[in-house]
Structures are given as structure tokens and as C-alpha cells.
Image 1 (cartoon, rainbow, N blue to C red):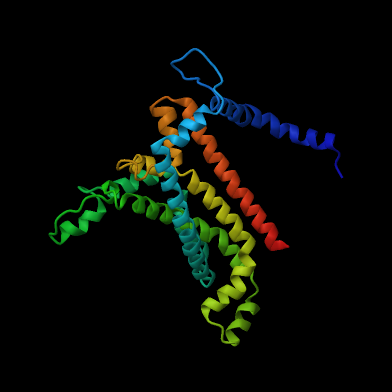
Image 2: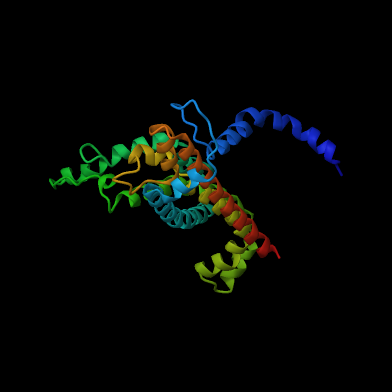
Length: 287
């Protein structure tokens, strides 16, 4: 059993690396959320919770909260469902499975910025792939869904599901392969349907892994930023504005750093809350 001093000594190299690149910037951002500091102002004063009050009362922030919640509640379950289905199909593919995994993982390996550029081009109303088929059959061109208020958020959700589903399948496949074949065979002999086999065998065996993946997906969805910035910039109006985009706009477009830092910390608190709830649920399940 290591003593506290021995643990601190072992932790020291990691702390040395984290201090200048993570801990200090985090502390400065936290301090900025309670101050009036901006690059154009040479004075510095603490303002308490004023920045948090300003953010919470901001109409764009309310829209960002709504969009982010809707984005998270729809994309995470669908990514889990499609990823699970894809992993189950790959489980039965013994030949060329590794190649299929690599090919299917390519959408996730592409950077979110490049992903946003690609889909912005594909959705383009003039030269995009979507309108290629309309012009091929001499049909009138359709506007880009990224510019339609009723479709923009659904479009960016679809892109995120397309990008993340292969990662979910990649993470779930080893768990499915670890389930003994005898369990599947016994369930089939007993006449269990596919849904029953998944419910009775796969889901219980993968439940801890599903909890972990759900937490990762939820954290990613709450902070989604890169690809939406390229595809829509948060528009039309504020229909695809997310919490990450709101923080970015305030800090780097409007140069209102305290408000941007405050929004970022609210995102961090939301992620921590989700993590805490997930840990509580996983412990309750184990008990």
C-alpha cells in the first residue's frame, strides 16, 4: 500500500506536464468568468456572479441550451442503436472484419473541420451532391437543408450520427465477440428471437460498456462545435447554435472573454453533472 507521500511523488511528473498546459489555463478561465477583463480594457475587477447572470438571461444562450439538449437527446440514442446494430453485423463477419472496421471508422477519423467542409459542399444547393440527382432528372434545384430553419438542425444531427456511429460499433464489437458462442447457440435452440437474444445476452454483458460509451457521447454532444461551425456557423438565425458555438462567438468574435469563459464553464458543469449521474447509475446497477 503506497503512502500519500509516495503517491504524490509518482504523480509529480504528470502534474508537471499538466500544470502549464491545462491547470493554469483552466484556472485563468475560471477567474475570467468572475471578472470584467477584456483585451480592450486594461483594468481588472471581480464582478462576482454577474457574468453568469448575463449569460443565463441571454436569449441566444437559451436557444443554444435548447438546441444542445435536443441534439444530445436525439443523437446519442441513435448513435448507440446504429452502432450496436453495426457491431452485431460485423460480429457475424469473420472474413475481412478488420478491413471493414477500418473502412467504417474513416468518417470518425476525419477531423470535424474537414468533415464540416465536406458536408457543407455536399449540401450546397448549386454544386452539391444533393441537387445532382435533381438536375440529372431535369427537376428543379432544392435549397440546401443547412439554410432551412426547419431542416438545419436535423441535417447537422444526421452528419454527427454518420460520423460517430462507426466509433460506437468499433468500441462495442470486442464486447460482443467476448460473449461465448455457447450462449448464442443455446438461445437459438430455445427458439429465442433476435430481439430476445439481444435483450437477454448482449445487453446485460455490454451494460457497463454501454454506460461508458453513453457518457463519452453525451460529453461530446454537449460540447459539439467544430463541424457545425463550418456547416452553418450556428444559423440560420440561431437554429443550430450550440453551447460551444455560443462560447466561441462571445470569446473570439465579440471578444467578450468573460462571457465566453462563463459559457464554457457552464458546459463543463453540465458534463460533470452527466458524469456524476452516470457513475451513480452504474454503481446502483452493480449493487
